[in-house]
Image (cartoon, rainbow, N blue to C red; front, side):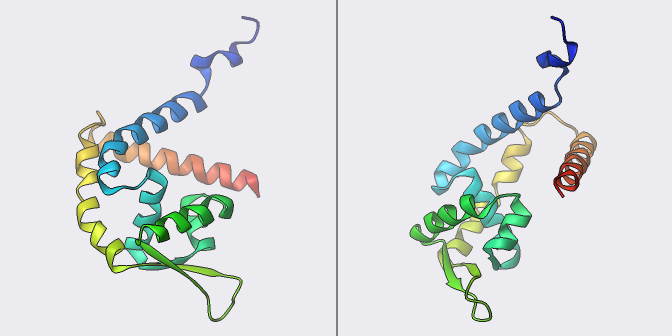
Length: 146
């Protein structure tokens, strides 16, 4: 091969991509029991932390655009897990709030992180280092977008 930089084994993006796909694949059976997707799960995680958030705030926390979040929130609303309301101060903003059913799901979902940690062959220290490096990578990529 004329260009070593084009070898798959030399790409940082490939193991990130493959690991992310594998992790989400391992979440699937747990999330299927709850009737939600991974993206719905992480959206609910934000709402379990803070009860409600604007679509814009959700997008910032989850690194998702409104074109992804709007149908996702509509789907969560159709499942009875959230409600969407217009912000009284600014009608252009949509606020997403947990319903009682969405709050109740938190108890069952709380088991998932421990079950998932058993799938990942990292020590606590390695996991902490990986976490820091991934967030550093995200911050760097976000900064280069600006």
